[in-house]
Length: 92
Image (tube, rainbow, N blue to C red; front, side, top):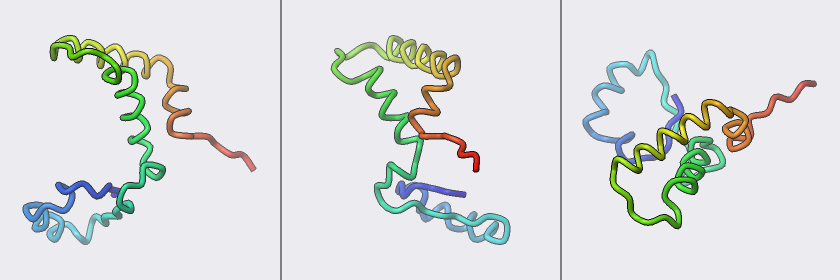
């Protein structure tokens, strides 16, 4: 499993579980602040740009509606996600 270095991925409460299943799972941590290696960071960037940047404070209901609309857009137009994550298949 590939993880970023969020504090909760290193939590003391998590250690007994990881120890118990160490024969079944290997954790690989990304280097500290490595957005280029974590495509989800680009999705977060896009979401913040589309929903929160340069916009007045809204109610939680309005924010959730905007988020729902963004998810619908991403679902319908999957090329956006591919472009954001640089997911391209090279055929040799």
